[in-house]
Length: 184
Image (cartoon, rainbow, N blue to C red; front, side, top):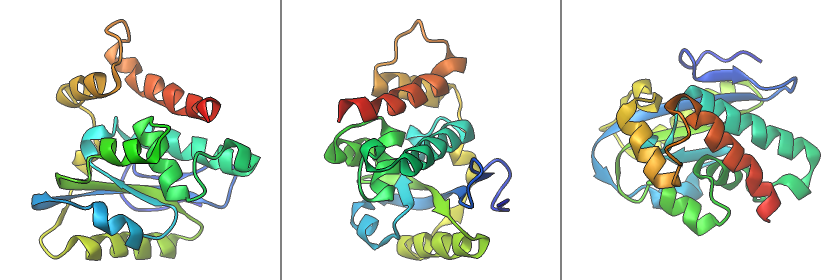
Protein backbone atom coordinates (compact mmCIF):
# COMPACT_ATOMS: atom_id res chain seq x y z
CA UNK A 1 0.00 0.00 0.00
CA UNK A 2 1.46 3.40 -0.94
CA UNK A 3 0.35 6.30 1.23
CA UNK A 4 0.51 9.97 0.35
CA UNK A 5 1.00 11.74 3.68
CA UNK A 6 4.15 13.75 3.06
CA UNK A 7 7.32 13.04 1.15
CA UNK A 8 9.52 10.60 3.10
CA UNK A 9 6.88 10.00 5.81
CA UNK A 10 4.67 7.32 4.32
CA UNK A 11 5.87 3.82 3.61
CA UNK A 12 4.86 0.47 2.28
CA UNK A 13 6.05 -1.97 4.90
CA UNK A 14 7.53 -5.32 3.88
CA UNK A 15 5.09 -7.27 1.77
CA UNK A 16 2.24 -6.67 4.20
CA UNK A 17 -1.00 -4.85 3.63
CA UNK A 18 -0.04 -2.43 6.39
CA UNK A 19 1.32 0.98 5.63
CA UNK A 20 3.38 3.16 7.90
CA UNK A 21 3.01 6.88 8.39
CA UNK A 22 4.43 9.77 10.39
CA UNK A 23 3.41 13.38 10.97
CA UNK A 24 4.47 16.29 13.16
CA UNK A 25 2.95 19.48 14.53
CA UNK A 26 4.12 22.66 16.25
CA UNK A 27 1.90 23.32 19.24
CA UNK A 28 2.51 27.00 19.85
CA UNK A 29 3.21 26.53 23.57
CA UNK A 30 4.48 23.92 25.99
CA UNK A 31 1.93 21.20 26.79
CA UNK A 32 1.71 17.98 28.75
CA UNK A 33 0.37 15.48 26.21
CA UNK A 34 0.75 12.35 28.33
CA UNK A 35 -2.99 12.37 29.08
CA UNK A 36 -4.00 12.04 25.42
CA UNK A 37 -2.13 8.78 24.87
CA UNK A 38 -5.06 6.73 26.17
CA UNK A 39 -7.45 8.38 23.72
CA UNK A 40 -5.36 7.42 20.69
CA UNK A 41 -6.08 4.27 18.70
CA UNK A 42 -3.85 1.23 18.99
CA UNK A 43 -1.03 1.41 16.48
CA UNK A 44 -0.35 5.16 16.80
CA UNK A 45 2.47 6.39 19.02
CA UNK A 46 3.18 10.01 19.91
CA UNK A 47 6.52 11.50 20.89
CA UNK A 48 8.55 14.69 21.05
CA UNK A 49 10.26 15.10 17.66
CA UNK A 50 13.55 15.65 19.51
CA UNK A 51 13.91 11.86 19.95
CA UNK A 52 13.47 11.02 16.26
CA UNK A 53 16.58 10.55 14.11
CA UNK A 54 14.71 11.15 10.86
CA UNK A 55 12.49 9.19 8.48
CA UNK A 56 14.86 6.20 8.25
CA UNK A 57 14.69 5.84 12.03
CA UNK A 58 10.88 5.89 12.06
CA UNK A 59 10.61 3.49 9.13
CA UNK A 60 13.13 1.13 10.75
CA UNK A 61 11.14 1.07 14.01
CA UNK A 62 7.94 0.36 12.08
CA UNK A 63 9.63 -2.48 10.15
CA UNK A 64 10.97 -4.00 13.40
CA UNK A 65 7.56 -3.81 15.06
CA UNK A 66 5.87 -5.37 12.03
CA UNK A 67 8.39 -8.22 11.90
CA UNK A 68 7.93 -8.85 15.62
CA UNK A 69 4.16 -8.77 15.21
CA UNK A 70 4.38 -11.32 12.39
CA UNK A 71 6.58 -13.63 14.49
CA UNK A 72 4.17 -13.62 17.42
CA UNK A 73 3.92 -12.50 21.02
CA UNK A 74 7.38 -13.73 21.99
CA UNK A 75 8.98 -10.88 20.03
CA UNK A 76 6.57 -8.10 21.02
CA UNK A 77 7.67 -5.63 23.67
CA UNK A 78 4.08 -4.82 24.66
CA UNK A 79 0.60 -6.10 23.81
CA UNK A 80 -0.48 -2.62 22.77
CA UNK A 81 1.22 -1.83 19.46
CA UNK A 82 1.45 1.91 20.24
CA UNK A 83 3.42 1.12 23.40
CA UNK A 84 5.54 -1.39 21.47
CA UNK A 85 6.38 1.33 18.91
CA UNK A 86 7.19 3.85 21.62
CA UNK A 87 9.48 1.42 23.45
CA UNK A 88 11.33 0.71 20.22
CA UNK A 89 11.63 4.40 19.29
CA UNK A 90 12.97 5.30 22.73
CA UNK A 91 15.12 2.15 23.06
CA UNK A 92 13.59 1.50 26.48
CA UNK A 93 12.54 -1.87 27.88
CA UNK A 94 10.26 -0.37 30.55
CA UNK A 95 7.01 1.37 29.62
CA UNK A 96 7.41 4.05 32.28
CA UNK A 97 10.89 4.91 30.98
CA UNK A 98 9.68 4.91 27.38
CA UNK A 99 6.98 7.42 28.34
CA UNK A 100 9.54 9.60 30.13
CA UNK A 101 12.04 9.50 27.25
CA UNK A 102 9.25 10.20 24.72
CA UNK A 103 9.22 13.80 25.97
CA UNK A 104 5.45 14.20 25.71
CA UNK A 105 5.06 15.37 29.33
CA UNK A 106 6.44 18.79 28.36
CA UNK A 107 6.75 19.66 24.69
CA UNK A 108 5.92 22.41 22.23
CA UNK A 109 5.91 20.04 19.26
CA UNK A 110 4.62 16.56 18.63
CA UNK A 111 5.36 13.67 16.33
CA UNK A 112 3.07 10.73 15.65
CA UNK A 113 3.71 7.53 13.73
CA UNK A 114 2.17 4.14 13.30
CA UNK A 115 0.42 1.57 11.12
CA UNK A 116 -2.81 1.45 9.16
CA UNK A 117 -4.28 -1.11 6.79
CA UNK A 118 -6.05 1.44 4.58
CA UNK A 119 -5.13 4.90 3.33
CA UNK A 120 -8.44 6.32 4.51
CA UNK A 121 -7.72 5.15 8.06
CA UNK A 122 -4.47 7.13 8.16
CA UNK A 123 -6.28 10.41 7.61
CA UNK A 124 -8.74 9.47 10.34
CA UNK A 125 -5.94 8.53 12.76
CA UNK A 126 -4.05 11.76 12.11
CA UNK A 127 -7.28 13.75 12.48
CA UNK A 128 -7.84 12.12 15.90
CA UNK A 129 -4.34 13.09 17.00
CA UNK A 130 -4.77 16.61 15.68
CA UNK A 131 -8.16 17.08 17.38
CA UNK A 132 -6.68 15.89 20.69
CA UNK A 133 -4.02 18.61 20.37
CA UNK A 134 -6.50 21.48 20.13
CA UNK A 135 -6.86 24.27 17.62
CA UNK A 136 -3.52 26.10 17.75
CA UNK A 137 -1.41 23.52 15.91
CA UNK A 138 0.57 23.80 12.72
CA UNK A 139 1.67 20.75 10.70
CA UNK A 140 5.46 20.74 10.27
CA UNK A 141 7.19 17.62 8.94
CA UNK A 142 10.59 19.30 9.20
CA UNK A 143 10.43 18.59 12.96
CA UNK A 144 11.03 14.91 12.15
CA UNK A 145 14.26 15.64 10.30
CA UNK A 146 17.70 15.33 11.80
CA UNK A 147 20.38 17.97 12.29
CA UNK A 148 23.57 18.37 14.31
CA UNK A 149 21.72 19.69 17.38
CA UNK A 150 19.41 16.66 17.40
CA UNK A 151 22.39 14.31 16.88
CA UNK A 152 24.08 15.81 19.97
CA UNK A 153 20.87 15.40 21.97
CA UNK A 154 20.41 11.77 20.86
CA UNK A 155 24.04 10.96 21.71
CA UNK A 156 23.49 12.27 25.23
CA UNK A 157 20.03 10.72 25.66
CA UNK A 158 21.17 7.23 24.63
CA UNK A 159 24.80 7.46 25.82
CA UNK A 160 26.03 6.82 22.28
CA UNK A 161 29.82 6.50 22.22
CA UNK A 162 31.84 9.12 20.36
CA UNK A 163 33.31 6.33 18.25
CA UNK A 164 29.92 5.95 16.52
CA UNK A 165 29.95 8.34 13.53
CA UNK A 166 27.03 10.76 13.18
CA UNK A 167 26.00 8.98 9.97
CA UNK A 168 25.60 5.70 11.88
CA UNK A 169 23.35 6.98 14.67
CA UNK A 170 20.18 5.64 13.04
CA UNK A 171 21.76 2.18 12.72
CA UNK A 172 22.92 2.36 16.34
CA UNK A 173 19.42 3.27 17.56
CA UNK A 174 17.75 0.58 15.44
CA UNK A 175 20.19 -2.03 16.73
CA UNK A 176 19.50 -0.90 20.30
CA UNK A 177 15.75 -1.20 19.77
CA UNK A 178 16.11 -4.62 18.11
CA UNK A 179 18.05 -5.87 21.12
CA UNK A 180 15.17 -4.95 23.45
CA UNK A 181 13.50 -8.27 22.57
CA UNK A 182 16.42 -10.07 24.17
CA UNK A 183 16.15 -8.11 27.42
CA UNK A 184 12.58 -9.25 28.15
